[in-house]
Length: 310
Length: 273
Ligand SMILES: Nc1ncnc2c1ncn2[C@@H]1O[C@H](COP(=O)(O)OP(=O)(O)OP(=O)(O)O)[C@@H](O)[C@H]1O
Ligand SMILES: [Mg+2]
Image (cartoon, rainbow over all chains, first blue to last red; front, side):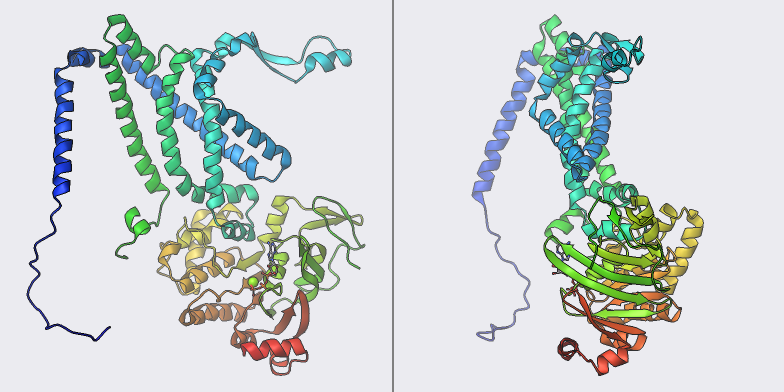
């Protein structure tokens, strides 16, 4: 609005010389040379043995390993999310017993490395020969009441129940539950208190408020980190090899590598498989995010850094 | 003397199970403390069926807290509150007071509509979804029926073409009208309004007050916390002035607004009128 020195009104189009950035060109040149060297190495170094890799990457046990890896990822995430919801609700319940149990659970399963958990669960059979379902402490109170026999209804051999795969899956799911609990807790806490009050004022019970109002809104905050968790889980299924689960993808690839002395091609194959599955998962995440953002129009970029308002 | 109601405990209560008077809302010596801060210091009020009661008072005087006590969003520290003959939040049996379970309190609340200052629409649901949610989920009304009724209600609040809009696509006034429709969808016998126009731009206040006026003319019982003295004077049957957690003065709007008897009422009115 200043009125000082108004220059003559110009109507010419702007034809200024743009600013040059020579340093950007130098940087780009260096990067291109490095990239060329890398590609050259990929092609010329015999250790890669591409034909061998291509031959074995799709062999039958490897493909089955991919399915095992995928199923372990999906199953442990599903169990982990359900467990996470339960733990998060317990944590926010205000009941001191539930709060402490949830806290202890999270403390333990976040504190112990997944690799250790996987091996630990693989060796649980040492602890118990059989898994039995029945009333607790029956050997004490039945004797005390003068009764014979036991109060166990169902019994199964631990080695059968906890095959390598089940044990590994259990380790991964329980560990995931602890992480998901924190993510879901943050999501639930991000929902405005007014939402709960409005829903309660309409006569919705607590459970219904959680299912219909709070959780769906928490999803927006929960989904992106859950996508991260899923991808991390996909990669952590490689830990199943240490339970050991021999049908798992990484175990199979390594086994082929060790047997044929073609270690490196099989490691590259592992990278490629994990990258491929991760990419598929990312596409899935994109659609799930869209599903839980109805009415959120305009691009994410516009919402975060501003832009033309529609 | 007031009996203290403590969380999770069974309390001795006076005999008799019904409210002492026949009115839709009966508040008897309602106290509420947050920790050591006493916000309500013994409120006695009756709201008759079909009455529109406006509550005014300075900020922090406990108006919202009292409103939230009516539908038990806040637990009373002492006193009793009945809506439609039901003791809110408790069951009285053989002279003792038992806390109601969550779903029993929810059932009591479903008969009381509430409209908030900040609208509190559900952002993940469309306007229609907001209005049908509670009838479908709580009352188990078939979805088709609930939808037809919601369309009617949205028409009634002047938003026939906004059924598919999401809250963030609506203006403040429109959001508040959807919020009113949402509360009405439960066919409540009482409507609570907590400063429904305070968060609105001045030019949007009128459209919300119009809807409330229609509602009052239709015979709805309403308790309205408001700073809109014009609305209180025209639509209100009674006016309550609250200050510092107590009812200082009450009467018809004309009496209280034109001839306030209390110094505190006078001081407050001279600031807002
Ligand atoms: N959940 C709470 N915890 C602690 N203090 C609270 C809580 N809710 C309200 N208060 C306090 O109670 C007092 C009364 O609050 P209330 O919201 O009922 O006032 P109000 O009359 O509605 O005021 P306003 O006109 O500003 O809305 C205030 O001092 C407030 O700080
Ligand atoms: Mg208030």
